[in-house]
Image (spheres, rainbow, N blue to C red):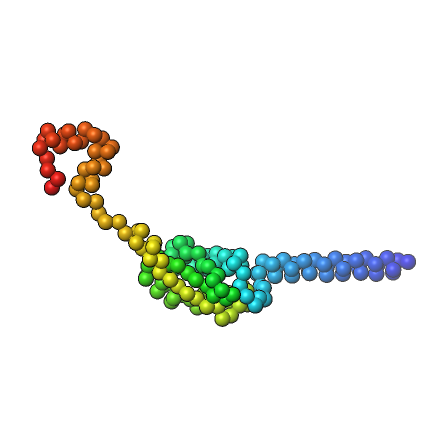
Length: 161
């Protein structure tokens, strides 16, 4: 009887160790997020993009990381990505670092052959360009805040130069 009790405890211990090892393995795989896919999913794309931004930060690619903060990759076809950037410099930076993002996709999702399209968002460029205000526009803006400025200008006989 004593021997069977010992074997039962040994068997139970082996079972618990096996379950613990299995749960650790599952936790590691979940943590690593190693997934085998044939196509890219928008949610996974966002997760990998966040990892890429963290990677840029760890590689001290500060300018590129700031550019990446303003970019959201879009999935335009099954394995085709589109990035809209604000200027030509950002486009060139992303082009030069493309291999690092591709490597991250390969490592985390086991995906290869992802197409990229990096577009310069002309709307953003046009909206970010603001011409300097003319002296008349400045005066009108200040007069809107304080109407006495126009009266002061007349009393002192000031021009717009």
